[in-house]
Image (cartoon, rainbow, N blue to C red; front, top):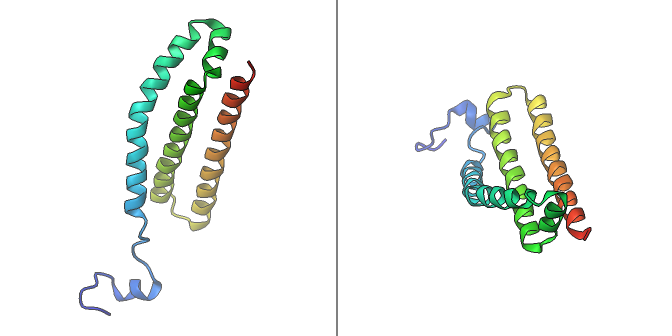
Length: 129
């Protein structure tokens, strides 16, 4: 074992240590948070204007390609940010490896399913006109 290593001998034998993913995960979470700082007010302000016109106004709003892209970016970023945050919670607080693996997979699948549903709805309403 190297003199400069901070791993214990048992940790070295078991291969325990840094997964080399922490900084990347941290950066992804911060980038999505910064993107949401811009996208949430933009989506909310434009949606408030859309619902004032009733159902027809909302459909016309989503039919505009620029606003549809804003909604898709917002939902995609929000669900990805949600998945990253829940992943941290699961990894930090679930001790059993099997339960943790199942919850991490479920977290990913539910996030993808929610985004796919939202994207389908946005595209379907956008193309209905």
